[in-house]
Length: 360
Ligand code: PMP
Image 1: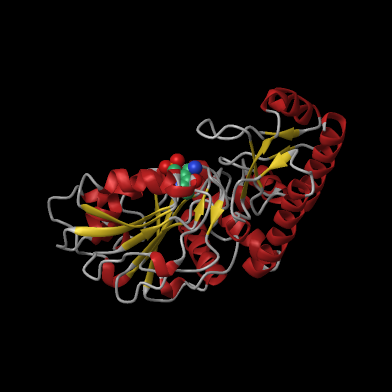
Image 2: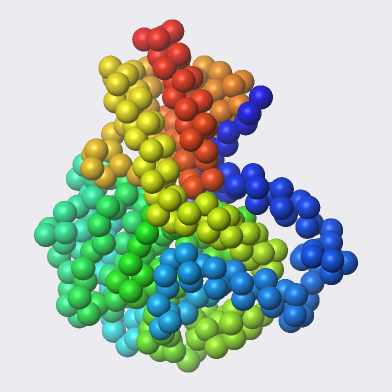
C-alpha cells in the first residue's frame, strides 16, 4: 500500500532523494565514509556545501548582493535574530499579524523593540490576507515583517507587500521553493528547513548584504549574521548532514523543472483538494477566504466533529497519514508540500468523497 504523509513538518521528502541518500549513506562518492562522518573543513564536505548554495542561488535566482546562510536554531531563533540584527539603532518595527506564526514572531520582537502591528486579520479569525491599502506602515520602521504562508491557519499571500525603502522580512518556512519569488524585493527571507527544504536542524537565511554588520556589539557572536556571512556559514560546525540533504533536494528540484514547474504542480494539487472540499455540500469546510487559501497547508473541518476520530482512523488505514489539524484549531490539515505527489492528493480526495457519501 502506498503511504502518503500529510504532516506539516517535518514533512514528506522526495522518494528519489531518500533513495540517493540511502545509496550514499555509508560511502559517499567513494570517499569511504558517510557525509555524517566528514570534517566540515575537508574538501569533500566543502564541495557539498558550496554546491548546495550554488544550486539554491540558481533555483531562486538570488542576486549576488545577498548572502545565503545555513544556520541552526529553527525559524524560532530568527524571531529574535531579526530584531537583534536589523533594528540598526531604530526603536520600532512593523509586523503584519496574519496568524499563529506571525503572533509568535511579534511576541518575540516585543522583547526587544516597539512593535507596530501594521495589519491584522484577527477580526475574522485569521482567515484572510489583509489588503495592502489597509496596512498602517510606519516610514521610520526598521523593517516590515510578515508571514507569506501561515502553516496553521492555511492563509497564504499571493502578492508581495511593497514597503519601499523599508526592508521587507519574510518567514517563508512553509512555502519557500513552492513558487517563484523576486528575492530582490526582500531585505531578508528565512525558513526552517523541515518542510520544503530537507530535514529539521537547518535554518535558511537569505539576507541583503547591506543589512549585515549593524548588530549591537554586545550581541553573542553566534547571533550576529555577520559572523556567519563572513565565514560561509562555517564559523562553527554547520549541520552538515542536513545541508547535504537540502542539497539533494535542490538537485531534485532542478531536475524536475525548477520552481516554476513546482508551482504548476502545487496549483494542480491544491485546486484538486479545495474543489473536493467546496463540492461536498458543506460536509467539509475550509474557513479561509478563497483568494488567500494556502497551496501548502489545507485546513478543513468536518460538519460533524464527532466523525473526526473515524475519519482519521480510516484515513490511516488507507495510508493517508498525519491529517489531524493543529491542536489550536482542531479539525484536519493536509500539508501538500513540493514532495507530495499528485497521486497522494488524488488518494486523499478519493477517500474524502467516499467518507462523505457514507456519512453525509
Ligand atoms: N514559522 C512558520 C511559518 C512555521 O511553519 C514554523 C514551523 N511549523 C515555524 C515558524 C517554527 O519553525 P521552527 O520549529 O523551525 O522554529
